[in-house]
Image (cartoon, rainbow, N blue to C red; front, side):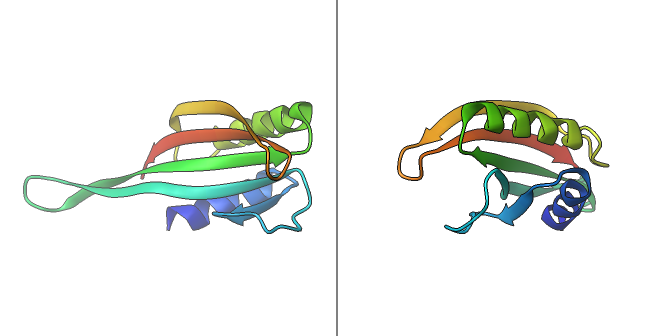
Length: 112
């Protein structure tokens, strides 16, 4: 599964906690959350699967804007070392009023 490979890679590259889909309420900040947005098999005319493509989202969370920007930069650098090279990387600033946390949402696509 691509999520497991991404988790394994990021765990070896960064020194922050990484969670699937949602961070627990007591998570130590800063942290990273990964979510699979799309997994799609691409088939040849004969019906064989040529490759798979995926769209993933990484959410960086921190208590300050400077911390979240620094984490997003580290994560982006780690993504470029992933065996499935990311493309169409988009980074969006966000702030969650309920949790009082800054967030950098990193969306990207990969072909496997």
